[in-house]
Figure: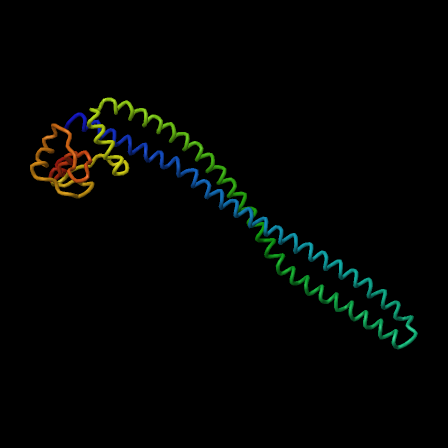
Length: 246
């Protein structure tokens, strides 16, 4: 195999690794941001439940205060009713007492309704608080892991790019140009294997004579269809594989 082709193969490997590292460096913050968004949504739901719980508590307290107020008013009315001089006065006291009793009854009914809402909500808030604490811890750990992983990826990427720059200096500029143009055209794919007379990248058959010349491997050749630099990749027979394993 031509030394330039061997170098281009290593160059493609470095480019593939650099692309994978760059992709991960870009993806990690996005993944973390999505995790943090879910945490924020959990916090907002818990805050809303806490607010609803507080409102229910205040409503219950207000109703209990109303009951005390009407209870006191009713006791006073019953006392005053004993001093009624006429039937009209007596009936007026009865009406006011009946109204107070109705308000107390309505308040007690509303307290039961509030309790039906309050108790499940209180339990849900307690469960959510425990879950939120665990989620915050997990997000904190993930933030630290992303920080460490990103730093390692950046260091490896820097090395890969430096190695690539050094390797590129050793390749014939003409061959390097062929590789770079093909890599740009096919989105980071500048090399393709050729097996059974076909370019594996574009799946176009090579001319028989061209394929035979590729097998010799004494010069750099490109696919006549996609222009990728070709590497002859001879098929391995099952018999050969079994022999190698024996």
